[in-house]
Length: 379
Ligand SMILES: Nc1nc2c(ncn2[C@@H]2O[C@H](COP(=O)(O)OP(=O)(O)OP(=O)(O)O)[C@@H](O)[C@H]2O)c(=O)[nH]1
Ligand SMILES: [Mg+2]
Ligand SMILES: [Zn+2]
Image 1: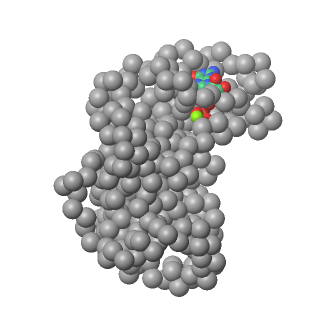
Image 2 (image 1 turned 45 degrees about the horizontal axis):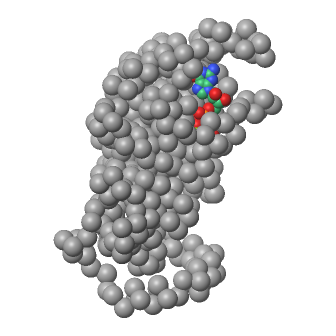
Image 3 (image 1 turned 60 degrees about the vertical axis):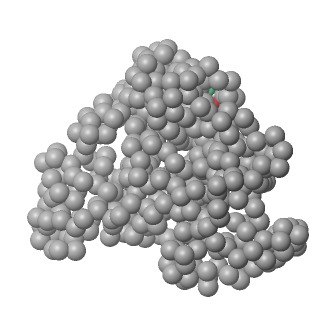
């Protein structure tokens, strides 16, 4: 058995340059031309800041005289930071913006930052502390950037819905990979379970029965893998006490497709007033109501983060050969395959396919595995 790949290395603004430069070299020679124009425009707009920061050679800043806070939300160039209960509007010191990076955003929700406060309500972020975990995905465009969803998270609440939008185990499996890679505990949430018992008239009975069967199969599959999975309803309140208990003293991020009810669940549990959107009747998908992530402190201790719905979830920084390492049940059988480099797709005498036929490996998981290999081959 090959060991699991190491978790995604947590990046800080400083570590990035030192530790990541080698692996980023290829990317930058390729990326250089395309983005040079963009960078020039940005630099021209921001010349004064660049000049100032250019003069200071980067070294670990002395954080003794700085205040520490946590990023609550990011509104273009304004970063709202919580410093002991006070919201401070900050900007990012120019030196951070100049770093070569494969990340789409240098600063993320949940980041712990050190701030030079210029007034009660305003300050400059001088340093981003090392992240202990990161939830990220590949951006939509040819996987060229890592898009950080949130940083310094204990657990990812992989939010799905029983019906509208359709329940998709493949998406769950992608989240599980990035959750493990990013050093976090996954918890799968199936919201809108009320509709299985009391479906609206526009949903056919057959569709409801299919969803019920798929959910039962998923509950069994993920429980066998020791991954917590909860049936919930923001409407009826089913499962909310259990979820509230799991969130106590933890930093949790709600992430999933648009319209699954992330903001509704948070509003129900915490009494917040996040905007709730309608489901588009023709597509039965959400309408991308939450447009930026928000971090909310919990009365019971800890934090939770509401995030915008994702359109797609590409795994980031994973090679095809590594995929099976994230499917423990597939990895466990792979040693018995006839060929040592068996991909479990077309090879004869494949122990994984045998286990699939015998019902030891769930068809849902196997199909996610194939789906991921295909996705990675196309990029
Ligand atoms: N029947 C039912 N509807 C729900 C439930 N939770 C949310 N909804 C509905 O689903 C729709 C979308 O809810 P939101 O909370 O805005 O979904 P979201 O995941 O935050 O969506 P984005 O912000 O777009 O990512 C709204 O019409 C909600 O009323 C539930 O438990 N049961
Ligand atoms: Mg929302
Ligand atoms: Zn095989």
